[in-house]
Image 1 (cartoon, rainbow, N blue to C red):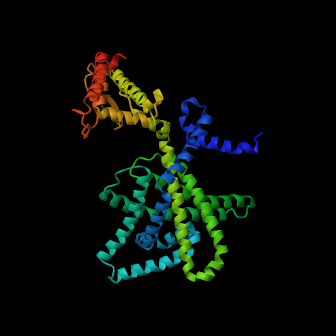
Image 2: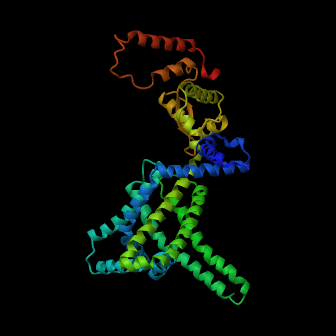
Length: 443
């Protein structure tokens, strides 16, 4: 039985396991059930850690500010497109249904949108005015993309040409999506109304009506996680994160709507101004949920990159050299046998070398001009020797390692420290000459 005095020790032990020991467990050594459990623990741990490291609370605040400034222009563009298709009323109705906690604000916003459109008809907003409207919307979505790219550690975003075409496509498809959703709701209501005389259909009807908004929200978040980052995101990981974000957002919506009952005194004090802080709070927490889901997507897809992370950062020079030699020898031997070239994933999985360390060493060997990166038919990188394998000896490899980098410093190794310099040079030459005939392909 666990004693009270042992609880702090057990908490420390559990924390050490979650933050360090679980990352030293190799999935191939576990049963299927344990593998899933450990992987779930790793994903949650990594997502929370990276949420803090990326300072997503501040990023959520920045996006809240940008969203608030862009909300009316955003709705104006959306409703203008919907009006062009003749479905403005349906789109407005769907927006009220999806955001039941913001009906008062949406009503106010639609009034401003009508003002925008009326002034546009009268010729006030033409030319630069319309461009400014579109720029505001464009700038908001660019900010969202940049935040997602930072989460995914993508250094290069979409080009401006791609941004214009991609973002415009979204605005064309969004009204269609809302219309289809409305059509589905009408169809279900009609279908169940025909069966209203059968009491046992009532629970099914209520369950379907309850679950449809959750399903729509889940797939909306899933699409956002796949579409926004300028990198390839696997559907599986985006969908899992979409489930988390969709359900959490719906729970938050329910709490927010229920909580509005308790702010009647707040409304009595601040009057109509109470709408703004509540709206900002809703936006802030919505962005927190969205960005946390993005971190979960990233963590799920890249969890392997963080195995043995702490140990990889503190790796000894001796062990690092051993892995450099091992990976170089594997690539050389594979080439000698005429087999397909290794990929980084194959080296990592077959020989239990952490993937992040594998990629680091492969890049290092490319810099040393020992190997080259080539692309297969699917444009996936694999690795081959960069020179004749009969010239890649142990001595040659370590002489390249020894000379890699800069020696352009002010330390006087010609006179004052001549003896020390000669000693280190001689020790290296002795090591290299002793291994100059040992070829990597013969190890």
